[in-house]
Length: 133
Image (cartoon, rainbow, N blue to C red; front, side, top):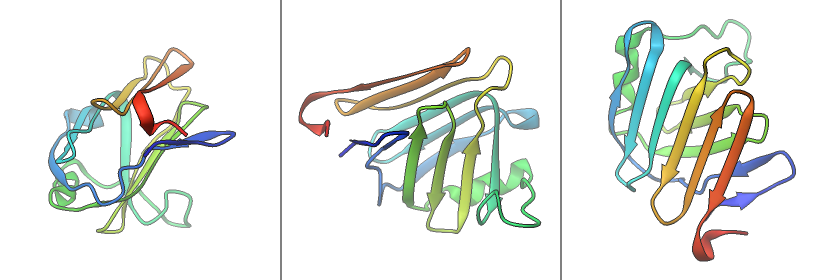
């Protein structure tokens, strides 16, 4: 269930398994699909770290390492009203998208539950049916 807080939405994807990850060169064009039918598309830069991105020494991992997410489950997925996005996985990996980058476009959706998007400085969340709180 999607839950709205003052500065973010908790996307209610805990336990959803990653089925596929596709990353274009230079981390451009990320597509991540979950078995819960949720999908994330990023046009712009998304980065993956092992552990929190704000931890000392946390460096973005290479493109090949994104495949470690396949089979992992979501521990937490949060879309911020600022346009940033953070997802944490059972492998200890953190997926991060920072808002404010020129040309950044992000869409994270789960049919019949939510559709969150961010483009050109504007974030929009649509919550469907009884999942809103």
